[in-house]
Length: 406
Ligand SMILES: Cc1cc2nc3c(=O)[nH]c(=O)nc-3n(C[C@H](O)[C@H](O)[C@H](O)COP(=O)(O)OP(=O)(O)OC[C@H]3O[C@@H](n4cnc5c(N)ncnc54)[C@H](O)[C@@H]3O)c2cc1C
Image 1 (cartoon, rainbow, N blue to C red):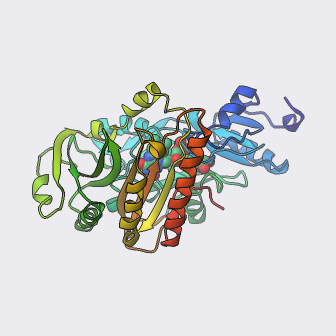
Image 2: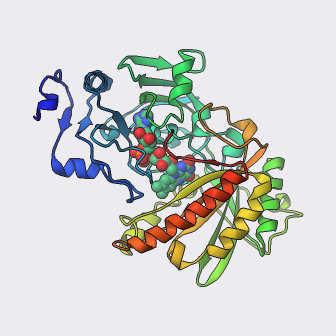
Image 3: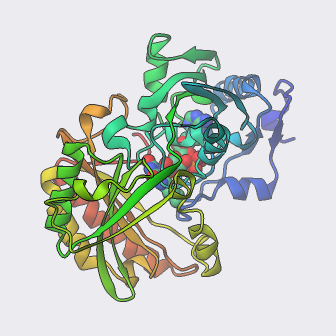
């Protein structure tokens, strides 16, 4: 063991200093930022994390947790510090009628596999379920149900945290509130979540899923706002993309009932055509599972992903999406990229560290770009395109979502 860790108190888990592990910890889904740490901790429990945090504090090392490493700008990396790999702390402890208690390294798909047999689900899910609970609670966690229920961080009942001091603390809305508010959307820099008690609501067996297609982004945005204000669908998202040479502007509106009752709720909307289907709740929430093997096949899963996630006031949404329509295409997105754009109600979000624009309705806009491997000039062009989007969003009073905290 290098000099730096010789006096580290004994751990039950392991501290890995191997080259391959350090290289692994210096890579994330973004594939653009690479900061190797000095060591990777694989903790057996919260006490191991506490021991390493206290030790690192004495030696001036930063300690940063890593969930599934699906960040895109090095958020779970620390140059020369210690990365805490949360993957093995992934037990699902208990499912009760209104809550589930899970380790922070569990993925949302693990949570659902435990709760759905009881007819229960967390109220807000991210589009992709292979993210860790700790990873999304450290950014917010937004999805198509957020216009009803806020962020995932707004649906947490209790957290076990290893604080930056090394103290092991339990916190919640009425208990150690300052820790609770610091760690939710705290990017792992204000404490490491080891266990979470998450709110559960009844899960439907089946859902009715409408995909509405639009001729203009103006109509898409207007209808999204209308539906979110009316609150008549359980889930509302939207996206822009080019497929088979055609521009697609799509609004997804889903009712969590198997009965096909949605059409009345679509009256008065300005879509061109609609594709409606009924499917199981699991197939709906796990709909991105097929994307990973597809992207792996074409070499775009492990290649760079210069993604950009923003929250902007509703009155700026149309302008930004018109600009995005102009840049869509293989050069800046590949044939597989897309832009998510959907509205959220800020009165449903109360997480203090989840920075959002000052507006009743804000749009989450995510430019999801896929660069080929070994093509730095393509990555640079995508990053330059992101810089333009960010400048527009900030000028309009928007915020960046997921970026490292200053
Ligand atoms: C394919 C894909 C789909 C996505 N879909 C959505 C979506 O629908 N909605 C949405 O909101 N986001 C979405 N995201 C973004 C995602 O929520 C964040 O990037 C999230 O942080 C990733 O979780 P992770 O487990 O990979 O975390 P990591 O990338 O490993 O870590 C992310 C951050 O969380 C911190 N962290 C990790 N574990 C802990 C812990 N236990 N305690 C405290 N801090 C911790 C890290 O230090 C880091 O700052 C998506 C990302 C991808 C790649």
